[in-house]
Length: 171
Image (cartoon, rainbow, N blue to C red; front, side, top):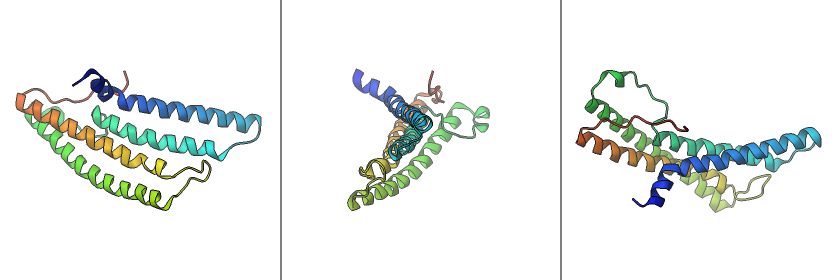
């Protein structure tokens, strides 16, 4: 893998999360000041905060899958051997991949319908498809990260190495 690809692979979700989080906090801060000082708020600010939060949630989901930081019950994993643990992780990733592919299909369909009908947001007056696309983009990232995880786990299982159990999302 090239250095650029490795950097993007390692940090893509982190940078996207940072961008959306800064956008959310900055807009919310401005809107609070406008509301408290000028007794005036805008509808576009509320929309930016709402849609930034939606993107944060879906990109964060992909980041959690990448780092194995998603919610799971792992009590059993403490009592089984390496090979069984790897098989359990692989099985869980396959189930999650199937669910993610179904969700990707239906969320894409929703965004596509909004695109075809030209729906726009109330405040920003831009295509609603850009905001509805957060869900299929998020699920596409989840699918990509699950495939990476499956490949890594299968290689680890074949090589007899312990399965990757995750790192901290933010150090």
